Each structure stands twice: as structure tokens, then as C-alpha cells.
Length: 173
Image 1 (spheres, rainbow, N blue to C red):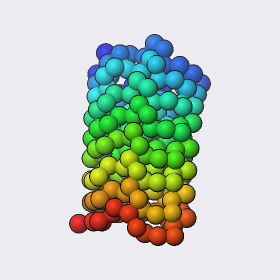
Image 2 (spheres, rainbow, N blue to C red):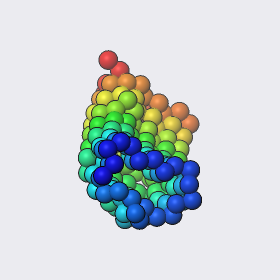
Image 3 (cartoon, one colour):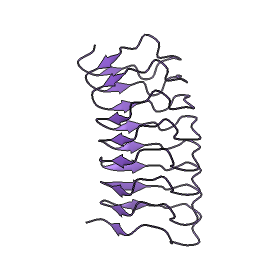
């Protein structure tokens, strides 16, 4: 077990084979060439950053993340297998997602970031966001499925809106 962080970013790693099974701090393998999470540590103390790899499935992620979760810049078309509870921010920028279904149902950090995807709907977004919600640069035509309450800012520029109809009720405090 590692008591602190385990960071192997900006490498040529293709597999997580040999990863520690338990990490007391953060786990970071961003900007590598990993495509499968089959040797993902079973216990991670805080943040998980698996951004900018070649991951196309989120199998083996823990159900609960004690810090932020960053899965941005991968080859994801779906959030199937994603963690359900994220105590920090959640980032899934720059994938090919068309929906947020099967993603986290609770995000308690400063931001829920889902920009630069192919989102056609916000269905599957948590009902309440503790911080900011950023869904810029998608294919959204309305706010259907948007969180009912966002306790920070709402960013939705560069979409294809023809209506602001949806479930959004409260923005900011």
C-alpha cells in the first residue's frame, strides 16, 4: 500500500498491471496510453485522474470517490461503469458522450464539467450540483435533464439552443 499519492502521468503506459492495490492519496495516470482499467487499484484515498488516455470503458472505477474524478480526453461514448458518488469535482470534457446517463448521481465539488462532448441531452445529470455546471460546446437544443439546482454558475455557450426549456430552477445562491 502507498500511503501518499501514486502519480505516473505523461508516460507510455498501456496497462495498469502492477499498480498498487491500495493508495492512501491520489491516483494519477493522465496523459499516458492506458486503454483498460482492469488493474485499477481497489482502494484510492482521494482523487482519481485518468484523463487523456485511450480509455473507452469505465469498468473497475470505485463507486465512491473521496476527491475529484477526471476522466476527460478519453475515447468514451458512455458513462457506464462510472463512479456514482464523487466528493470533489467531476470532469468528463472532450470525450464523445451523447448523454450523462449512468454517470455520478452526486457531485459535491466545485464543478461538474461536461464540455466539448456530443451531448444532445443533459439527462442523467445529478439533480443538484454543489458548484458550477459547465456544458459548453455540445449539441444541446434545450435544457432537458439539466440539474434542478446549481449552487454555482451555469455555463452553456456554443450549443444549438432553440429553447431554454428544461428542469433548471435555481442558479447560484
